[in-house]
Length: 445
Ligand code: GLU
Image 1 (cartoon, rainbow, N blue to C red):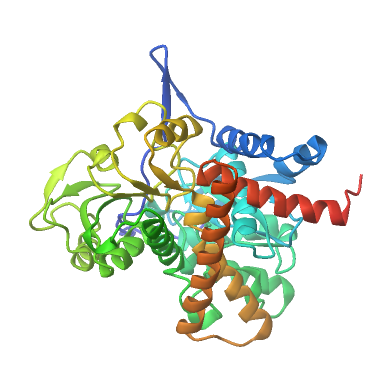
Image 2 (tube, rainbow, N blue to C red):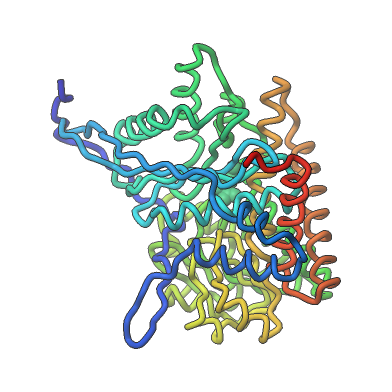
């Protein structure tokens, strides 16, 4: 029986999440979408060429292991049924269970999910945690769905994919458009199948369901730590630097807040609703409060409204793209003016843009290092769930700092030894770690 029509259905207001439009490349007056998975393959090939590895093993490790597509019926609040497409791509299980978030966004495609899954494999290897890579996504606008619709969509997605998931198999987490609430429904649906609670089936859960202290801010904290280490390398005093951030969701707002605490002056901030600028510096904690209330950075006192893309070209020391892929492309990279690009988002800089930024001597801290704090604390959450013992926030943050600093130094050393960018160095390090495991395990072929 369809549910009764609800006359005054409450739509949740659209928060200022990082839902910027994905990049396109213009060629001969035509705009064509840039293949995100194509970008990962280019990054992989450039790094693999610098390592003398067996070519057939490289072919094996670069391609996703399994891609699953489901079409999900969901009963809407008005009693009708609507179909949604969902994906889960498991890229690698060589180093451990596959790990990676679930994205709810209208721009989700198989190409994008494959790319994000591959980046998870390389990211987990860079921070040296025992996971492979995966990613999931549902094509939807979560801010246009009611709480009940979101819950039914989530449960149906988990139910249709249930055989793929499990604490030893594949462990989801939040990504763009999802958060602890969705992870709670995930954990419950998975646990119903097992007939007991399985907290280790998902990370990024609410704390009372077995979530880890420090997980919510872990990605932003990792970005802050990466920027801090990069500033040391460039002999920049953070307290006298300026910054701009594109995207003011979980990653953008928390990395800005933590860097603001270290004295960094943020002059430009954008979110999906628009962008603001104040050369004297934006009070980030006050902006976070403003966004909680108004769901937009716009209207923040003492800041003038600017075009959103201007944020990428701000004359600052540190630029943090923390929205979506393909933001800095071959078409606009020449206009970027900062010293450090810290990739809070996955894939914000295309391989064509990388070449231009390298020529301009801009240090790019690649996504698979810079935003790896999230999955690192997801790993800590999974470890705590296995032990049924919770660490203090100080312990989580301390272990995160150790992991991030070690990974940063490993990547920097590789970059210096091979005279290459941090992106290619991070890929080289990750590929070596995955290939070593594959060679020792052998390929069952
Ligand atoms: N979605 C996040 C990422 O892209 C976190 C993944 C996780 O914690 O498993 O890294």
